[in-house]
Image (cartoon, rainbow, N blue to C red):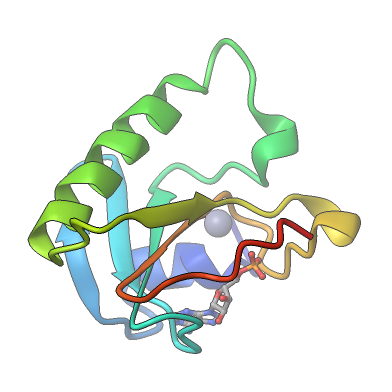
Length: 113
Ligand code: AMP
Ligand code: ZN
């Protein structure tokens, strides 16, 4: 997808600190961390956001959650963590490529919005 920051990270055009990669998924450190551990987990196939998930493309979400659990173990988030996805303007999505924030390493604020 042209003009997509995360597609450019996947292709290597824009550098990132990768922490996990397979054929379908990339995980890398958020450039502006909101917690001691703040990792973004994304599908390599461009999907605009959670609003564009459907029966044909949503299997990747289950795989992303498996990667999140694996990274949580790797980063010793044994006290807990949070997975967040923002969708659209009201949801605060700034990068229009589906991504899941994995946050942890400290007691997180409990307000949901
Ligand atoms: P969202 O606001 O939910 O769309 O999340 C987008 C996230 O991408 C934000 O947390 C940004 O800090 C992060 N971000 C933006 N540019 C980069 C980049 N070049 N490398 C890593 N993370 C980025
Ligand atoms: Zn993209």
